[in-house]
Amino acid sequence: MFEWNESFATGIKEIDSQHQRLFEIGQEIDVLLGTYLDESTLDHALELINELKDYTEYHFNTEKKLFIKYNYPDMGAHLVQHEKFIEYLKSIHPDEVKENQEEFLHDLLNKIAQWIFKHINNSDFKYVPFLKNMMK
Ligand SMILES: [Fe+2]
Ligand SMILES: [Fe+2]
Image (cartoon, rainbow, N blue to C red; front, side, top):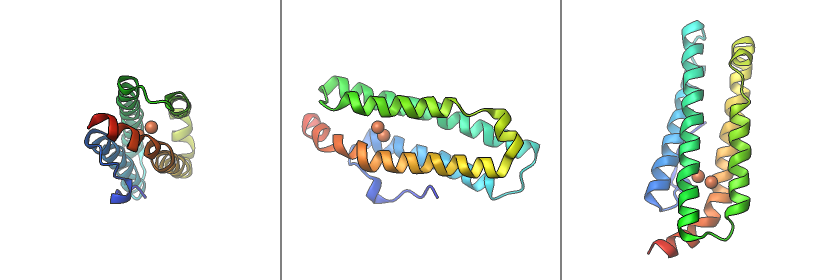
């Protein structure tokens, strides 16, 4: 599900390595879902979801710093998208994950994957020409 390919590459090194890390964490959760879920694998899944949350915040911060540094004209709308996604990630309750387990985790992972792919392709790619030009 979280296969990285060149079509996601922006050509901005820092951004690409962070996006790749996000894919890696997603991939780890996906692999875990393919195994038998018991108490310890569920705990592991929750840890990975937390890691994804933290890393996403860290990544969004990197983008925000670049926007501010180069005064990206579309930063307002972009940052609102980030905030909404962070809110969504924060609304995930460990109890819910534990109750419905597989179904819940599959749904969750699908939503997260779709959001990240869409956001990179539609929103992140919008800043690429601007930032590349400014960073020259
Ligand atoms: Fe991004
Ligand atoms: Fe972004």
